[in-house]
Length: 608
Image (cartoon, rainbow, N blue to C red; front, side, top):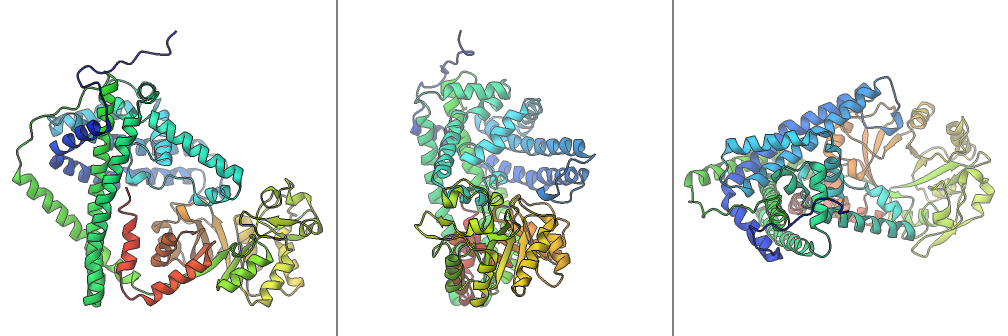
């Protein structure tokens, strides 16, 4: 029996979907409605940023409160009496985001597909699509649009999806072993392949009577075999062209600040603010037109391969409307001016010299295996102001310096820290992919050597599974016995341990680590928060600073990332490359101009 309804090519269009043909059809469709498309991009983003996403944010916050939480804090998670309400509200928040994104894409698709639609007709069609999204099967579209598309990067996109990614701290850990590194690459290849096969889902869903499940299955059928190569090539060419335009726009908007730095330095913050305002508006328009061109390519491909989607209408070239052109120009200039004025205080702020503290993550692995004495010495030689390391309790209640609860990655032996004594652990040799090797040190040995080097430490208390009920006090007693307690900081993923550390050491700086964070500040007695890089956003930084707590970002391992974090004025960065971080900070402190700092801020805006 056949596996479903047979899909036949559309006879109303040429039976070819060559890359150039797809791109030409898309370009003509966009140019036919460019004035209305401009307004649609502006209006849709206003609705998303001023209404849909704030509403989803509020519902999400109330969902947490229903379960007794005030922030995304996995350490506080528990199934409380309000948990069913939490689940319901989370589902509503997800539905709001899904509905907003599909409506945004649907409006662009519908306008391109039929340029003759009036605004009223377009609104009715968008409402029709919105009702389809509310069908119970929307879970499949949600998984496709909110997870699969942003993770594999092929298909429709939105600025709201930019943060959807596997967190860096997970990919970095997976990248440290050959097997997990290969598995991650294979996973991304599979995700990319599946996403290509489902690329026509939204055009079919929006432009036909098909529901979400049938749209997904139809897209899968029309992209079988070698047919999607034309689609992939068209998208690659499109991205390459838009990237070139993006780079040109980036340097064009950066040049006035560069000129001001050299001719009128006092005016640089004002010029940089106005340039940044212009960059925000132009990047929004560029992203919107990029999505429209991609929508045209996917719609043209779908029209060739299935009768469910009719061809894009190609009306005669419309007469130029001076009124529309003047209105669009006025909107653009006004938006640039407003956003530029709002950005000027920020430019004055980032012109200050950064004082971000550089913390070496598990020592400096360019000179030794992580968490070994050699890595500690290498970090000290590189000039790291603080060295972070991990310690956990052993089978005999003592403390070893180690990050992994299972030693397979570093020793090749799949044994647990909790099942071994300190003597057994410190007799073992660890290795890394760079060819370094060393002995596992005890806590006392590590801190003793740090004190000899006059090196401040950030001690991370990890849980191995062998913890005694008094493990926090045991840790402090171990350090105190060797007169090793003073002059160091502590942090931990376990909030109860962080609070106990603060209770026992009220005059010591204590941190609480949050791998996933957002919305609000957790209820903790800690002095600083350590946020994973992907969730350490501007709002969290403001909330943390307003609460009187330090804001530390981990693990920042790219030069661009270090630049941005220091320009943002975070209190400290935890990095595997303290050498890069110190050089970048020194450069920023010596550089009195704003062009370099503005370039790092603007770079995220002009990424296609």
